[in-house]
Length: 586
Image 1 (cartoon, rainbow, N blue to C red):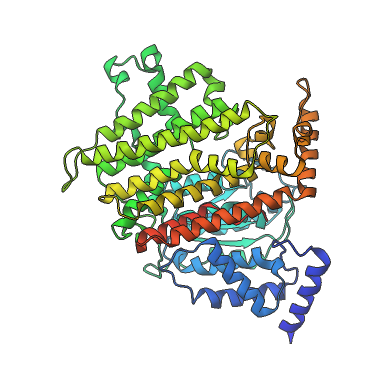
Image 2 (image 1 turned 180 degrees about the vertical axis):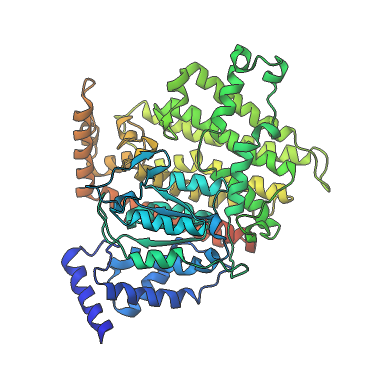
């Protein structure tokens, strides 16, 4: 009877406090939360752990659970968190306490009493007893946990990918958990979480007994361990950040015998290697390594995250080349687009000027081809055959990418000319798709001759690239303080994007006037205009139209990946799509 009353109250609560479109309502009634959690633990016990947990799989399971209980879809986000936690608990149990990271939110502190200071690593709690952060942190540290009191995922992912932790246990609001979900699902990091009951910046609350229960998750080695791409992601990071100069030693600095970066001859080399390691998500070398492993049966993806893995030298060189080419394209793109920030820092051309930045970009292109040219011939390969095939793959992608970018730059020269949606999508397929195509094809070719179904991979990469770029367009309307990105930078730069094309579709020639900014406008005036444009976009359904196109391309990418006639490659590409491409704004 109590469960029935809780469900009835939950329905009233949902109708009263939230509109029907939200999926981030936390059940106010503790009884409802306990009911969902009990059922989530039961359902998670039936999941196949040999198949990666994707966001769509998690969402479908949460929807089915809520439907079975007769509860509103508004609880979907919260239910996904408790389901995911239940799914990953056996894998967390396999991780020793000293390899676990506990993330606590600074918004749980008592703002009126807290005298703690902030550092790059988060809040330095004084343990004053004014809030629960102190005793929760001490409990975890006593067991061996590393504890961070911070907000957001950058510092957390840096620790995870650097190999300092193999499981993540966190407390956060649903918005923060949603933002972190992409990277968590991408790597398959064992993760458990307890959501906050409210989403605000201070004096928040949660189910503290559940946090204690989570911290006390026992260490039981050799418990159920599913597939995880964490080891491969770490390998991609290690190849670029730690081993780049071992794989491709500096030549100029060595030739000038010790003068180093102070010598003008070494400046370009020094800036290039530094920029290569500066930041990024390392998706592309990870994809190359993931596909290479998949062709060989996915053995590396079935290893634990703390297991050191290695691949042949020629594979490492090509994975590095993939990232080197990507970094070169970013330098040139930032110049062409007038972007001021990248990876939370000023862009290379802002720091060094356009001529030096252009030259560094060109240098990296040469460095990428030298990585390919220097690979040894693997056993069973015709001498020079692998290098020739890889050069063909990379150069074809290079030409196609530049053609797509060139089309965008040409359209940007004539902002008063109408731009159509199909035209923009074709440009996206050419400017973004090739980078993912070459990452996949390189992995396939490293594992052996390119298969007959390579044309399916190319179609998948184009659909994936279109969806990826649309997602980037959508994120342009979200302030990203960690990356120092401002709202609507594409629009401010008058860059032809999907939103530009949709603006022409909805408003015609009036759109050019709507986004026209006086040359002497202050930043406040420009922001006011931007917020006005965003309000108009909301009113006319522009964001909804962009989301619809995004979902269509995402579904097409999933369908194309699902048709790949190789079990492990198919599974990896489906997982990649569902992990990287979110399901839309929520």
